[in-house]
Amino acid sequence: MADLPLPQGIELTSLNERFRRDPYAVLRRLRDEAPVHEDTQLKRYFYTRHDDVKDLLRDKALWSDPRKANPGTFTREFLGRGDEEPSMLMMDEPGHRRLRSLVSKPFTPGAVEKWRPRTREVVQRVLGKIDSDEFDLIADFAGPMPTVVIAEMLGVDPQMHADFKRWSDLSVRVAFNPFPAEDELKEGEAARTCLNEFFSKEITLRRKDLGDDLLSDMIRAEEEGEKLSEEEIITQCNLLLVAGNVTTTDLIGNGVKALLDHPAQLKKLRENPELIKNTVEEILRFDTPVTNSGRIANRTIEIAGCPAHKGNSLTTSLAAANHDPAIYPDPDKFDIERDDTHHQSFGGGRHLCLGAHLARLEAQEAILALLRKYPGLAHSDKGFEYASVPSFRGMSYFWVSTRSH
Ligand code: HEM
Image (cartoon, rainbow, N blue to C red; front, side):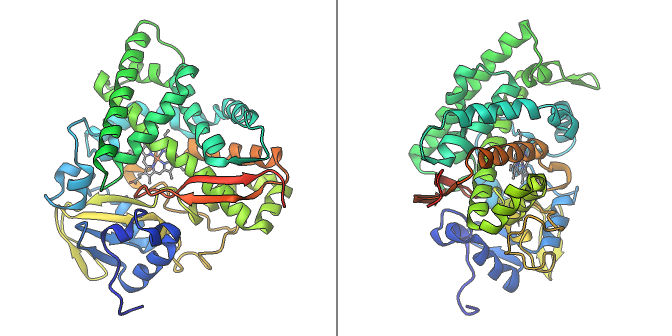
């Protein structure tokens, strides 16, 4: 193994079949042999040790705005395309703080907890539509559920929910793909345009009649005399869809798969449903829906004797950090009673995932309700397939059977 060249470029993304099948094996090798790896193809430094990833994400001096990365680097080439306003994910201070503080209130643990009963209703509604012995967990359950929740939070007409899902899926597929095909790019742009026009109309309607929803909150939001412009509101709405939907779908999908793959853990959860919170944390650690995040060096940074210079792209592998044996004993073991379920899956520092509490709540409610409805839930012969969206890990389909064989 040691004399094989280290993986580069696409080999470090889910566009590569081997990485898609088992990213943890590829990442283990990097962590062991080159914890700071220079990916010369995609022009970035790739970090795999838990403590390096954690420190980089929490380093508040580092940048996130792709326009600050050197020409030719991964961040500048692949994340800095397009001429739209950057979302807060790709903004630095003071703009980032301003935007985040204007939209963060509905995402605090207390505010999110108030959504538990509504989330429970949505889960029941989506589950209620499933009426066959075999179904695709992604298309029929884990996919629609988070879109309906965020659409309800934004106050979107339920009749629009299916369009919403389609547009958000299409735009995510392009937003995070360093090598989109020409038609994918076109489809993604068309979906973006539909979303933007839709939000613009909704904002005009809301301005006349503010309600008790997230969109109205954003229009109302005022922090130190500042309001969000229409363009900023639209950008943040897009971010909520893009950042929140596929990720939560993947969390539910990866979680159900981990449980079906580990029958003793599944049995334990069925017998002790109060373990659901820890179970969701372990799912996030064990098979994170977002495999990478990143920053841009604002100065020379030396880790493990490898310097990265100002303007270089730094990719932090959350998936590798979560499986670092220096932190987690037996890291590849799925154990819902683990004490050390802390993980890097929501990133950290200034850009720590805003939707973390919402994602947790949705996954807790979705998985418990699914297991309650189907005491015999099992893998189906129709199988599953991992999707090839770089930086994300989730399945494009995952067939389950409601009766164990
Ligand atoms: C399992 C589900 C999710 C995962 C794994 C996830 C993961 C992440 C990660 C890794 C980041 C970047 C953090 C960093 O670089 O330090 C992030 C940022 C963000 N996420 Fe999530 N996310 C999830 C669900 C959600 C949901 C449901 C929402 C909202 C509805 C959301 C909204 C955001 C926003 C707005 C940011 C940007 C925050 C900032 O730049 O200040 N996410 N998320």
